[in-house]
Image (cartoon, rainbow, N blue to C red; front, side, top):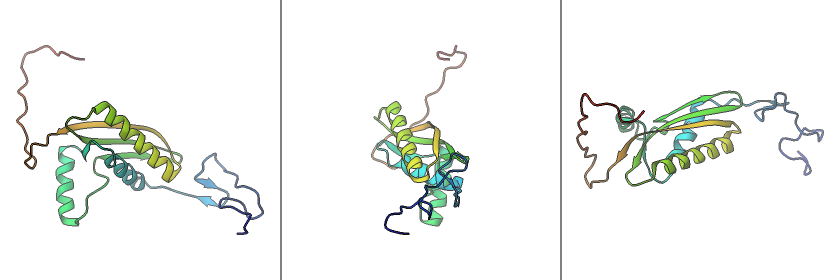
Length: 161
């Protein structure tokens, strides 16, 4: 490559022509990004947001803790599901929020961070990020103390729709 050429330029000096409008398909070849890559990026990006205690629902966290005890490293994909196409990705993430954070603001911050990370690192357009809050972590000073669930009233009319 000469001093005047830049990565992505054709050797004759003409810029690369995208064959399908995607930055992942060039005249020199195609880049395929697997689901696992996008899932790991999303998981790490979600964990970076202050107010996220952990990822995954109850069962996923238990399985993740068992898996982590054998492998020695946490599963960064825990609680994350993705769909990856040729040019786009969609993400579903399940979290446990720390008590006291504004959950609607937390969800928006998670969305922003995941979108920025995936689009910057992969070039894929993120079409949606759905955030499900499975629980709120109460820091009671003891490890994983759980309060008993409130008993629902039977024979009552639903208050919300």
